Image (cartoon, rainbow, N blue to C red; front, side, top):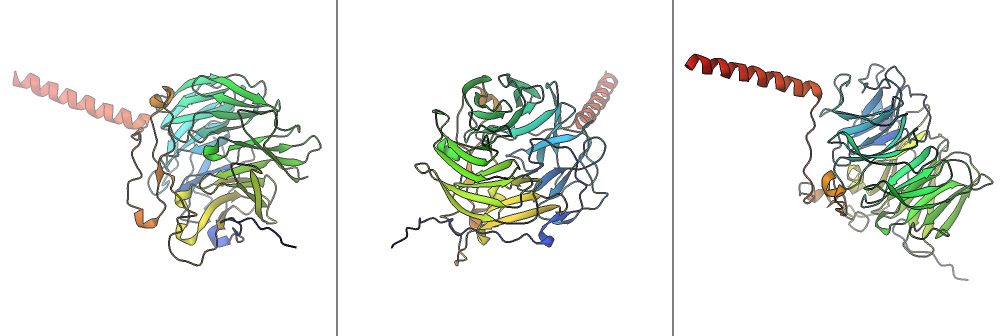
Length: 435
């Protein structure tokens, strides 16, 4: 009897157990809990909240694993615990932080990392009435940030102007997750009332709403790339974990449903639009399951599972341009553990050739915005700007895009103003002397 095996370039993807020399340890983690992933990464750094007064968090260098010194420098500017952060997708050294003190602050990490405690933010955004729980940068528009809060609102911010553009008030209970679609035109939000809503972020209005899962625990979301499909992970009424794939334009029934297991941890999904691979890991779990998404029936294929006895407190995905491309590292996840620090999980496609593998590394998102916040707000809709991952093309320009904004702190502006004032006084005195 013949047995059909589906052909896939990613059928044999594997990950070896993380090594201690490739990990970051020695942190005293903050004890705050919530809907956040607890760790976020850019192509250069990662951030995690640590214990201490003023809501501190530390910034680790991805190129320098090792043990953190107890006296390591911190970012420390909030008056209460930091709940979430998100790195600017177009600036690997710029991170936004959300806090229990109801504010959002923007920070610039100096080249080479922190050499002193960073206490002065570039931007201080106020507008939420209660704690800010989640942050998500728009994937194509420069300096557009989404946030949700304990005041039941979802706000869209123009970071450059430090002001809210729109506010969505349709969630009647706490927001559990927010995600942008591939172009940054729509925002999906899951809520404690069991409903998931698709929001038009430019107007702050609801375009679709449905109940994806019957269970009462958190529902997490991710858009599946340019397909426009939405993956939700949640619980059944019997507390079984499940994955569903939806077409947000028609939510009467899911396109696909996958039963996972009976574990209690909330699942965090991570999707790679370049390989169409979906990674699922649960808070409190040690395992990472991964699937391949196809934009037709049956929609989802199970690939394999990375197993570990070390539980996970949080996890994040590292931008593709930071991967070991010539080592065929198709995905890198950072796993935050309760006792063993931050571990790097590398998922490898086994190949014998040492040449660049263009079939598994198509052009990936570049650190270049497709349009400005004003252009996006006016209705501009563009795909993310792409760049080649081939190291031979490392110096080539990734393409045209919106210019980057240079932010300056209040102290810097004050210093420049004082110098300008002194220059004016000097020139005025010279002018009087000439008369």
